[in-house]
Image (cartoon, rainbow, N blue to C red; front, side, top):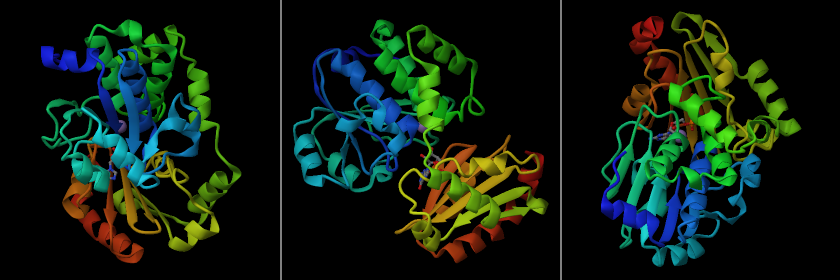
Length: 335
Ligand code: 5GP
Ligand code: MN
């Protein structure tokens, strides 16, 4: 990472700063945003963290989570707050359309814009861009940013707890997208006083009974394995949303169960959310699900973890994804 004098001044002089992350914020989104907030506050910044939609309940206890603003819930307040901002930091996304109306509003603000992100194919949307698709998580990049600024000392237990959250969630507890640096950073955070077990507990041991019942339903009644294409599919209908009272975050991680099957290389989770059909794809090895999501559904993400939205019905989305499997047969079998 390179730090120009202008960028250093933006960070080290107090600014009125907004930090954005993507819709349906996950652990990396909220972790990176709050870590950045607690870092910048040490330089006197006045910071607001803002997401287009609310975050899952398990992150409510991350330091500062309760003060985040949600565009969908309090749009007017968000607009008022943004009007005074002179620095906007975009974390864990790389195109304005990933934050919908919040992006349409924010891109016209007279503020300097900085981006830190690890998704493929960034759009040129910031004055200062840090894009590294090889990074495990945006939280890894936040760690590198702060230490690159020579500010390792400012990684307080509070900042570290937020960073470790994103490292763990985006690597599925160090199962994928790891690199040697990820383990070094995690070790360093623990040395700085971050409780790794408390962070893991918050993420993985905080489920409600209905989540486990929903998982049972998915595995028993909504799972199809297609051996010819080494593919597993789980789908959820609108009715399932009602029957299981599914709310934000409740379906997080379900797709990963398909990958636990030895013979599955491609995992597909399709769920009929109240307004849109959402796809989540995961893969093992060299199989590039980002290409599949981008080419056929206008989505994106990472090589082994990508997503997309469709306004077709659940049935036709399922038919469409099955119809394209033959195109990827070689790639799946080679992966
Ligand atoms: P998930 O399947 O967990 O929602 O998302 C997996 C990855 O794909 C995340 O990095 C997320 O940012 C990205 N992603 C999910 N949905 C979309 C989408 O509709 N468009 C794009 N460009 N990326 C997405
Ligand atoms: Mn991420």
